[in-house]
Amino acid sequence: MAGESQPCNDCSGSGWTAGIQFVYHLAQGLRIDPWVSYGLGYRSLKTQDNDGDYSYGGIDWMRLAIGTNWFISRNFAVSPFGQFSAGTTVVVPQGEKAGATDLQFQFGLRLLLDVPGR
Image 1 (cartoon, rainbow, N blue to C red):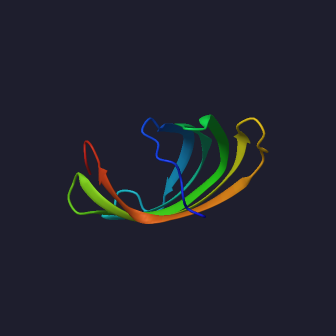
Image 2: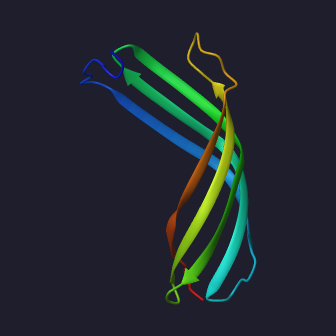
């Protein structure tokens, strides 16, 4: 039956990402600060379950975001944003095929701390 799985009391997983991002502020120094960014990076995921250990890795070759920082005080801002990213899986477990491309869309609200402030 779809969706059934075996209980796993000793399962675990861990992941990490690293990358570089370039941000351009359109109206720097104002209370409303629109920005656009582009980044790329690498991501890794390792899991362990009843069937064994699995490692995945991928290159995020495009992470494009837009947003606006709204400073509610000298040091704090809220920032609604939207982000589109695309990546390719390059490390997969034995028997699986690498090269899958994934697309992600994210929308959210960031909270910012600006030290020493505006």
